[in-house]
Amino acid sequence: MADDSDIAGANVIADALKEQLQILALMSCAPTEEVMKSMYLESLLPCGKIAIALQSAGIKYIGMRNEQAACYAAGAVGYLTGRPGVCLVVSGPGMLHTIGGLANANLNAWPCLVIGGSSDSDQEGMGAFQEFPQVESARLCTKFTARPSSIAQIPFYIEKAFRVSMYGRPGACYLDFPGDMINGSVSNNDVRFFPKVCAPPKVLADPDRITDAANLLIKAQRPLVIIGKGAAYAHAEDSIKDFIDRFSLPFLPSPMGKGVVADDDPHCVNAARSRALLQADVVLLLGSRLNWILHFGLPPRFAPDVKFIQIDICPEELGTNIGSERTIGVAGHLDAAVQQLTTQLNTFHRGWKYPSRTLWWQTLTDKISENKKKSIALSRDPSIPMNYYVALGKIQSMIPKDSIIVSEGANTMDIGRTILLNHSARHRLDAGTFGTMGVGIGFAIAAALYAKEHCPEKRVVCVEGDSAFGFSGMELETICRYKLPILMIIINNNGIQFGLEREIWNDLKKSDDLPAMLPPNALSPDAKYEKVMEAFGGHGYYVETPSQLEQVLEKSLTIHANEPVLINVAVSSVAGRKQQASRPYFKVCKFCFIWNLTG
Ligand SMILES: Cc1ncc(C[n+]2csc(CCOP(=O)(O)OP(=O)(O)O)c2C)c(N)n1
Ligand SMILES: [Mg+2]
Image (tube, rainbow, N blue to C red):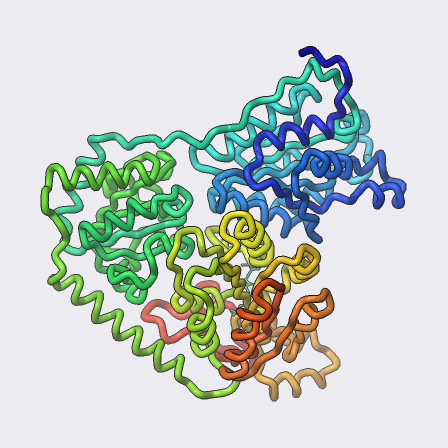
């Protein structure tokens, strides 16, 4: 029926978004109308209007403290749900704060959408309040960036942004809305809303490539499967678990591919990672890219003549860094392609499975037990302050098996990756492809909102280095305001990967030229991060020993199970990873450890 009443731009945005959103929550830092009025900025900060319109349309609104953390959260919502999380931000500095989040989501191949307000179009180029070339700024870190051509066309752009962010290789999108578009209105008759974008098609792989892949795999002497977060995103866990079991293949998870097949599965060779990479002769990549995380697929970390089978949603990815002659590139949806490969092996190589008694398995299992022995010895070290293995080992022994684990830091994340085990797909969120610090709290907020809607019985456990925590620490207030039951654990070594021992700190702080004296990686010893949580109404604890950690974990997981908790865990400022076979990361310099960029 024709409706000749008018509709405001803000309401067109809200109604179009409502059509597309999956998890009805939106991360934002837009001021409310009251704040705008009190600031006399109503005409200049029109984003608040969108926020109110969204809430009126029934979309839940999560007001965060910094746009950057809000955008990290939106990216994580995208990863967890397969539809972009949406982040609404004010113009200029607000929009610019989302650049880190847009880039992080885009490099992780996660769907994410930022809606930015911008100054009125008739003030463009005049030096308007918070004016900035926002569309241009977003372009380098998004798949699609646009400013709608009219109010009536807004639903078209929103539908397109959702579709582009979800289809093909997922990624980030940005839409820009000048104030006059948000405040203006059009006749309802002129607006055409688009139906919800449906899930992307499961693109099948080229059968010839599947044949080639199967033929290469069965000839492998030392096969290795690497499971990436692309496999987690594709919900390929059942097919991959079946594939690994059926053909009895050793596998390594990438950092966020952990849990697609459980870390304690007997085929998991994570504890022999370097050896497995170096000696494999055929590597099957499942949604995992040959970027820095996998040492580009090149020597000295891989054998020079290793062959790859790459399965990826994005054809352009196939052959990256290694050239196409050393890889069988299979483009397709991970779940579909793995099933095709399974069928191929079952049909044309009936009964094939990689033998369990081979020198390769022996090499891997020997290395695993050697490395496990070293980790166990470290985790029994009775020294106080604790080392990472003791603290993380205690956490691993107490948190529920199906926890959603968020983790960031250097040592905290790297060592945590081997000690904190995952048993389900999409239950691990960390600094990811971009290596971004500061993502953890936004991710934890996203995970808690996701869990509330889909699996309220699951715990969100966020294990942060003290430096990583500092990037978005004020979001503790957000956690407390929305009563999100997140268990935050700070592994506090007073520093970025390493800190200063107390005696050295006490000596140095007598200096009246601290910028000249304090090592670049040192942070304050005795920082009482737990007090920040208490300041906002959550529970905070500080612990120094394994038994104190055990007691407060017990309490946090029982009587405080539904509340925000922060445990500040003091660990040794000089403890690090166990000796690595590969090159060292640091060299010692006077008081401190300096980044050794050349390795
Ligand atoms: C946005 C951003 N800034 C800086 C860095 C460089 N960086 C890498 S790890 C790290 C912090 C490591 O310290 P912490 O979180 O305390 O973990 P630890 O290794 O001490 O356990 C930093 C700042 C980064 N990766 N991302
Ligand atoms: Mg630290």
